[in-house]
Image (cartoon, rainbow, N blue to C red; front, side, top):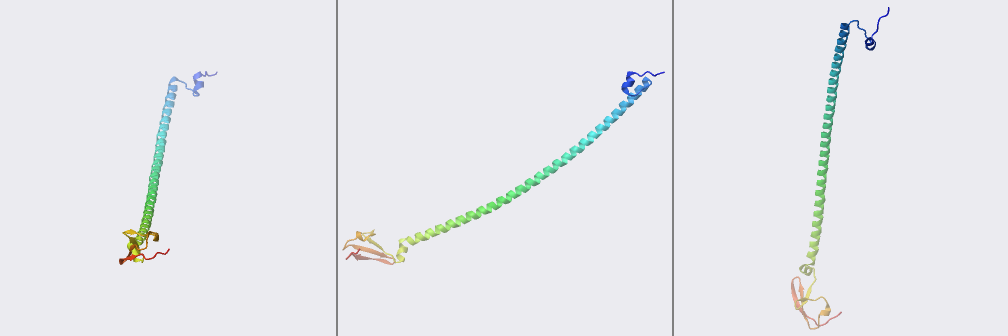
Length: 163
């Protein structure tokens, strides 16, 4: 004699002889499922915490790297600025010294061109009626001229002209 197989038995793959046995089976399966879900939840929480801790450590490492890198870059830029500042000071000092020397040379040449200094070197200044004579053509025979030397002056009379 064959046993009757119900649709529920065929779908469930598990046979229960009585409704109480079926209820116990379902309660046990529900308890196992809840336990399994709780274990999965615990694993998920644990794994999430590990990932977050790892990411936080990685982020802290990056922050530390950025801090040290920026500090190094700032120090390098500071050193470059100090070097350029010193170089600029040297260039400015060189230019100022060069200009000062040029001014001193100019003053020296101007000094040599002063009438007093020209007279000391043996040159004379000739005037007639207070006006400087630059050419012999401005003089006539009989004119009275004044010749200035470094240590005095003298008057002369033009008696002859030669070109």
